[in-house]
Structures are given as structure tokens and as C-alpha cells.
Amino acid sequence: MALEIKRLHLAELGSPGDDERMPVHGFVITHPGGAVLVDTGVGGPDDVIGDWVAVNVAVADALAELDMSPADISLVINTHLHFDHCGQNAVFKHAPFYVQRAELDRARRESPRLAGWFDFAGARFELLDGDAEIVPGLSVIATPGHTRGHQSVVVRGGDGSPDLLIGDAAYTPREYTGPVDQELPPGQAADRPSWEASIGRVRSMAPARVHFCHHTDVVHG
Ligand SMILES: [Zn+2]
Image (cartoon, rainbow, N blue to C red; front, side, top):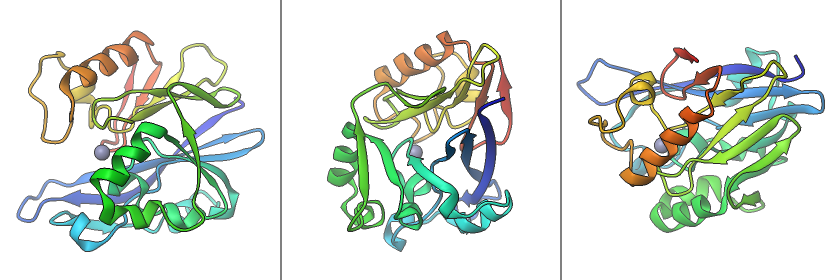
């Protein structure tokens, strides 16, 4: 297979007093020309991370588990610009960041305290307006709703149906597979109608596998 998806374990998040922990996953996609990183894990000033209890992993250490280093990553895709998806962008100063233009605008406006972490001096953004092919077989599709400029990643390995890296368009298999009018966990949908449209869109693609950032199970289509 020309493109291969590898999972990174970047953090555990949970609220104080709550035993439940939520994983934070990023993904490396290797392709004939190099390696792409999807999301960089947790980082940001304390007042942004707030009450989340983070067991954090340096993204360089997570890459080392794959016998890789940050220098092996030639470009980064951020599904969106929340602190647990772009917090370690600055580790990849050599790489361009592929982000929806609407998402960068949103994050600069809504999260000025976090902006220093992803909008560091010299950060090179490749701003996207909707769907785009990034390298052959690897595309992003706009999936707004969780945030205004959220995007998901589609990987076509050549065996038919694609793999979908869904980002936070669905936190877990429950939100992905549940009824469209289900009750959602806090934060899942900033804009409910857009969220429902995006879930409908990704389901209609009939992905062979759906990979989540905040759940380790893979949903098989
Ligand atoms: Zn998010």
C-alpha cells in the first residue's frame, strides 16, 4: 500500500474528580514522498488548558515510538485549531500547516491566548478554502460544525473505500454512528445544523475505516 496510517498517542485528558480519561490521538500518514502529520497534540498556556488534567506526551517522543523524528514530517494538517490538536505545532517550524482559512480566522478571533502557540513567528500556513488534495491519495474535506473551519482527512490506499481521519467532527464512535438528532456531549457541535450536514456527508462517503482523535476504537464500514 502506497499510503499507510500510523496512530500516535499524544495525551490523556479528563476533568478533575472524574476518573474517565479521553485519549488524544494524532496520525502519521506515510506516502512515497514523505510523511504527513495530522494534528500535533496538547499545548498552550495554562489558562487555555484550564481544568483539563493532561497527561501529556511530547510529540517528538510519540514519533520516536515509530522510529521517526519531527524532521521526518514534511507537512502538517491541523483538523482544527483547538489546544489539543495544534498545541505542539511549534515543534514543526520547518513544515507548512494546512488549515482551512475559516478556521485560522476563527481561532485568531476566539482564542487570542492560544494563538501564540499555533501562530508563532514564522509559522507557514497553507490556507484552504474547502476540499483539497494535499498529496496524491491524501485529501482534506471541509466538515464544519465542531468549529467553523473544521476539516477531516481522507486517505485512499488504493483498495477502494477510503480511510477517514475524522478529527473532532465526531469525538467517538457513538457520535459518528448515533442518530443525527442524538444528544451530544458538550463542545461537540458549535453549530448543530452544520455538524449534522457534515456527519451526513462523511457517512455518505462510506469510509472503510473511521479513525478518531478522542477514542481508540476504529469503526469499520
Ligand atoms: Zn476540538
